[in-house]
Length: 618
Image (cartoon, rainbow, N blue to C red; front, side, top):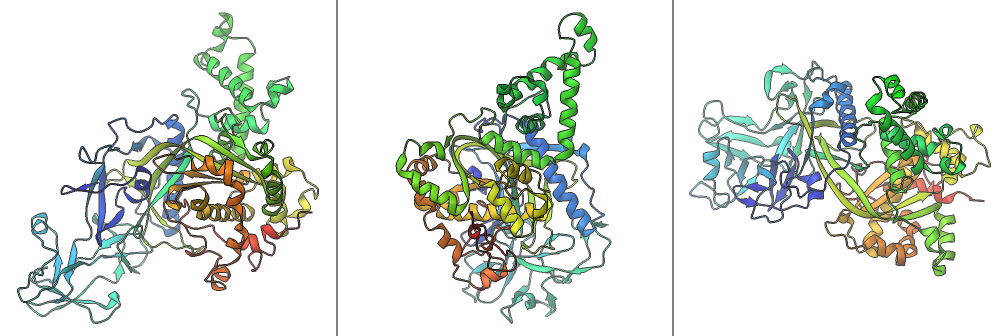
């Protein structure tokens, strides 16, 4: 990042969270704002294998978040994003710089440009560049004062319309030339500004928002009555928080948009009718290969298949086979949301159901030739309800900043974040995402699905009368896979997985050689699993080492980490998570430290009558 030749370096992964449009970062106690990001044109990025799939997934996420915000707050001055807008979405990759002296990835500037003297209160409000260039922050302009200037880093935020406005007080007669900040209390809400020329006192900021568009004051964002604004400090991840979505990069079928449906259908056995051999039926990789070959063969002749049959190019049964496949795909699409497709197929790819990760190692197989771990792992499986641990040496991920959440960050259930896409201009006609494809390693943890379903039933998140008391793994798998994404059971399973993930990440530096800041996570509630992966620029093989040498140690005393927090009992009584026991930096956690609760394992509050680790497994 560059500003007036003052260059600052960030790793590409952390830049997704800190250095996209409008984001704030702090250096030397001064807040700065990213103005723009340069597009990749030097081919230093890894190639994205399936950009069409990436675009579809990110577009659906952006559309959902933005339209939900408009609907929730009645922001009728905004236009909703419809399906046709996918053509206006741009996939941008960072301009990566190998040598910081030979190029920059973007531009930033000091924000806000309002400063006051720490001795006399002289207030400087800069609106033109020339005056700003000659500003000396270390010396007050008043000759009789030896004070230094501090940044007044506050803005106002309207919780209803989501607008963030700079604080630029001025005297109606004398403008900003003779302003003085009066700090008569520690509470910034009651600070005043005085014009030393005429003696007029000026409110520091307007207390109410009329919901007029700051870029077009003749246009109203909302017809609701004026609402009170909040005074927010401008600091890193405070008023603009980048929303990042990470997915697995899958093979590209340029002629086929339904790769997720085909993969999921292959796994679920929906295409078994196409085969007579049991070997093929039990081989999702073979099924996927067959179906894609059939559809690719038929694609050039779909407008006139009879002509291709008459010429002997395709077989007479091929149109009917294709029709059956298309009907099956339609059926699968009716039963699963797009986000569920992504989650399930990402999990299946990581677990090597389609031959993408042939170097995977399962811990249950690894201990067969390393007998010293066997007994300890059997104990862990029973106590912690884990069914499998898989090391994946070659993971292709794409992390993308799809927009920003504006204003306050709260975990209250009734609050919806003010999500704003990365618009290319103020006209809001084209929007963009910043994507960073990378290769890494990681470990995926599968919970015991039977125990997960039992736990959901015992906590009354599922109706136990509907399920077999003596269910096997396949029955439990189908129950979990068909959980309603908006239902109570799915939500609490997500909390269970996310809490478990945070526990393991917080312990990772002791055993993997990776700092907490160098880890990332992906949750797969529909598969009762989670992935922890490395985000380090240099792959030091930390997860490979811990898998082969320290996996048992990684879990050692994990229950003690869950049991106590220095802020108990208030932490456990409130929501079971805080910065002391579970929180991670926001560029590590994909959910802004939401969906966390230690009580999922303990069962000590009215939120959970039975903890996951307190179930009698017999």
